[in-house]
Amino acid sequence: MIRATCAAIFVLAATLPATALDCPLDKAVYTPLDADDDWSATDGVINSWEITHPLKPDTSADRPWVVRLAEKRQGHAAEFAIADPPGFSAIHVFMLVPPGGKDKGFDAGKAPMSLLYYFDDDLKRVDPRGEAPPKAPPLMQLPGLSKAFWDWKRDGRRFVPPDGLWKLTACRS
Image 1 (cartoon, rainbow, N blue to C red):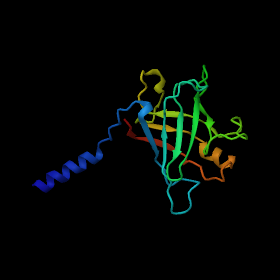
Image 2: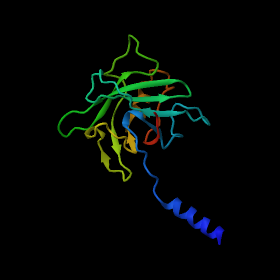
Image 3: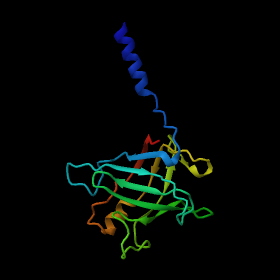
């Protein structure tokens, strides 16, 4: 009887949706759902990617935070400002700091950029901007950013993030 009850509770718990983290956007940590879709890792190696949104109100951006894309195993990171033009245009990101830092040859106009989408648990697009402080949505996507890094070739293709969705997995204090 106890085994049957425990098994029933386990099955029920497995069918319930996971509860989203309640986290402010500037403390949120996103990790890729497809971590093995890493174009810069050698076969059998999985890099340790994460996206955070540190506050940086002094950037030339439409939002007071940036998108920081980091690969912790190799110690590389890039920062992107957020552009949110008025009207029906989509939110996109443009590079402020390339992996390895800026040098004299850095041209932001030729650097990787991408659209930026945030999603709720039902994959409906959401915008955290309307909240104060903004709450981290459960999912985000930077479509085409992997290919943009691959085509850029600036660092020998050591920094090519996984494509696809990124999931809110932690909240840093």
